[in-house]
Image (cartoon, rainbow, N blue to C red; front, side, top):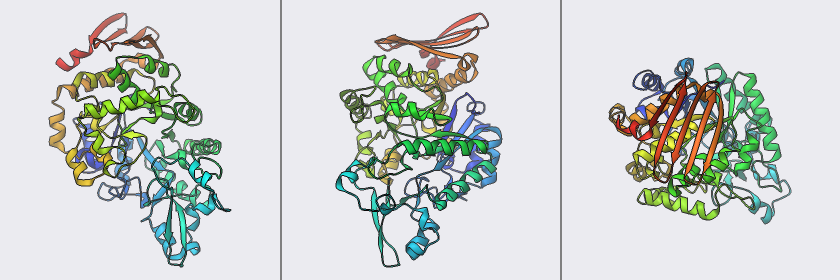
Length: 491
């Protein structure tokens, strides 16, 4: 089971400027006793494809620039270790797809990839195409000519360099089985099912989170569990979908929490946040920031389903982020900067809060007191600001929140009051026994109280959004202490 303590999300190279062994040294050195586990973002060959490793040429190989499977195994000896099982697609540069380009249907790997004809053998109507849910505008099919003289429409949910896998075919099953085996052999104990909601496609549906998708998640989860690994479903969707998915896998992400915390801080109102915490899955990971930006749709309406926030509140949330970042997030979001994901705003979470140290620490406090195991993205650990130079260099929107750091950057960040305060908060979350007990929440309007109780141990986060008075009240071994959040910045 995953440790109920704070976990790190990071790329090996972007946090250290080096590889997996340097990351291990960082965790055993300057960040000793801070994190119980690591979500190691794609370390497969190559790490510098068109989607920062999420378009693997070889999903079963470690990029030699980062290290080897032995380095992965060593890291996993002392920390929970999460890796991405990229369920939906593989790189168009993979040797399997390159073989398909040469041989067409005669390739041994033809059945590994999904074409439009696989799902629509009798043709596809305009209505059926419009019904397909895609996180980006445009068609999810890419016509590609093969050397057999034929052109085939391959399914490309995300980009034309990410060819969708036919997960129902024997080739697709064998491909993913091989990756799972590599993980289990090398101390990876948690599997993040990347883009799993898109894996199953059926004619006449929106091809996203179908009933059969839930069955598929059941099967994958059971398969991973049999190998000694837990599964985490990575799905951006309506909040009711998250509640349902949570019943099918070991854990889900609480992607509704990041926008709801921003909304509470921007509006000085906790009602939407408290409404969600009353029904949110308890078997979840909580995040504020990730490599993918700040998700928005998870808290909003979808189709005829009401959201935790209404459309006007979502619009106000996005516009306020753009204001807080002085327009920087606008340059990296939507159709800007080669980034057209419909469900995220690209910015560091710190800058989304206007680089306000207190509000940032308050956002983390709410995250740590919400139900679930907290994960903190490496840029969030060091309260990084938007990397406009990297954005200008790559013109990739999400790079605004994917900085390359080195030892000097980390040493400087560890001296910042906001980072010191965050590390103190992490220590509270890691060490207070009440976080292994029962959660409760109460309040309305500008006030909320988030509490944990285990036998005689209790800890409560008391928040007044209107005047920003925030206290952590601890009851432990018949002793009560009250700590103001502001004091964590000033000690």
